[in-house]
Image 1 (cartoon, one colour):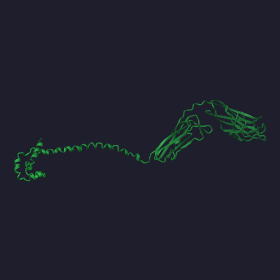
Image 2: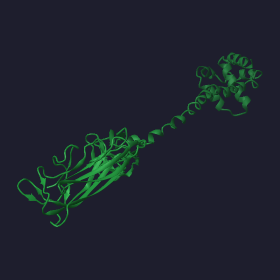
Image 3: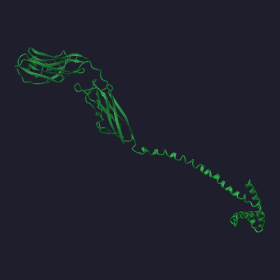
Image 4: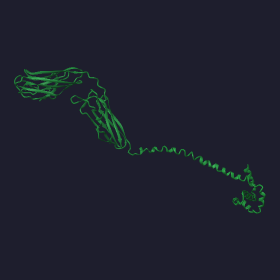
Length: 400
């Protein structure tokens, strides 16, 4: 069994840790013991990833009871050149190396690599040390490589904002959430950096009683963490996809919130929108109530027109009646009064005419000659009744 370990520099063989791949080549007793190491280093920012491989031939190892072949090195370690503990692999504790006898090939490969982050910029020498059973017992082989950790550039400025666009149709609202702006790169797995234009985590919250369907109301990148490197622009359609459809229980005012955990100094960005669901009855929205405004303008001229009309005819009606009394003025039969006296004996009924006012009109309707005769008959009747004095007085008043 073989494992990778990280041990202190003072310990050559210690507790087991990690995993290394051990390949079992065929046993060959004729080969001379030897060991070869391959070391590769890749730098990203302040982090270095190391790939380690070894291969060779060695004597058997003895556990105190018997000698046995080994398919991997006795041990190997990778030192990063600073004061940190090394990474590595240790074989079974308590084994000792045979110095003669048969040999067996071995090989190790740390395919996933070792990773280390330096605290500050500088040049570092990485040293890989392998242990195998060779001439004279436990032997070592070293392989080095140099890495340069540059002073990091200032972290780019990033900022993000959350948005919710929506439309309302009856009791249903269609929402499109999005995050815009920029964020730093993410790190996931074994320190791998990725440029994702989506938040680490995002969620949407809705009021109680609302029915939500369609779209994604939460999500994010699993097992990822934020770095302070790079600047990645958000993809606004990453969150929208299928819009979120929300049906509210009744008309009213509701709040919906989008919260997102992003790789910025602010980390949490959110947006809350207030959605107004109007009543379904169209009566309040009917524009007809605005029509009565022109109606008050039409009756305003009407009261002004009829007011002078009824008042003017009342005083004017007596005016045309005034000429009627003027007609006797030229026809006053003053000289004919003697003639009427002769007719007094014949009109003995004049006394009754004076007592009955209805005889006057009969005299006017029984005209048989000209107007003078008619007037004479009227005057004679009045004389016989003793009313001549009243007519004279009336005439004087008219002449005045």
